[in-house]
Image 1 (cartoon, helix red, strand yellow):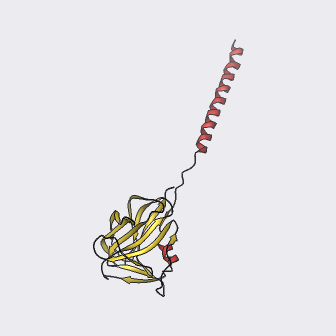
Image 2 (cartoon, one colour):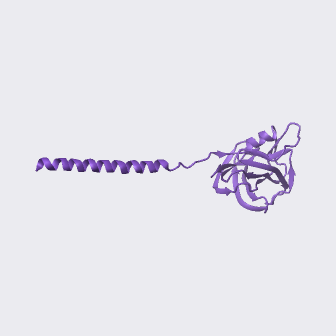
Image 3 (cartoon, helix red, strand yellow):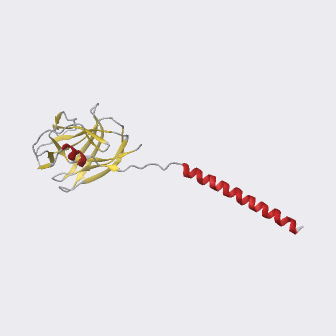
Amino acid sequence: MKNLKFPIVLKNLLLLFALSTTVFTISCSKDDDEPTPVVYHEEDPLNKYHELAGFTTTSNFVNAGDYEFGLAFSPNVKGKINSLIVKLPASNANLRVTIWDYDAKTVLRTETINVSAADVSVVKSISEMVLEKDKKYMITMNSNDWYKRSKSDNSNATYPITAGNIKVWEYRWIGTTTQVFPTNVSQNYNGGDLSFNFQQVD
């Protein structure tokens, strides 16, 4: 009887092993079929915008009057702003930065940035702000210090300018200390430096 039982036990063990291997293979195959989510790199459009605009000349303005000024832009893809970036030719412990709905001219986000030293880029992480594809926004700051970026001959740039996934429509400004939507448009320079880190989400 012992000789008869051994082959049956062995046969059952082999069958169980085969079934386990099949289940494991199917499970692994299913996992392998699931696509890996794409994580896009962050992009700061400012330098590319300056390059494409031909703004290669820089002048520093310090204590030169209070203005609300910045860039109108739209993303070419859906994405989000993760952080704000600013550099000034003077320190400012309470620099107000605003992101606007361009068409409605309403405030979407206000942040205060401590620019503790001149000529040093400051990056401030913010709670993510989702931006819709092709919707127009504006980012401004209120300051009396800034860099003027222009062409050597002070001629106009040609807009819109596409820098990566961000399309820049215009530069706007208004003389004020209050948080108001800028009404003046200038094409021959950009006052800054003010930008953001943008990340595509789909």
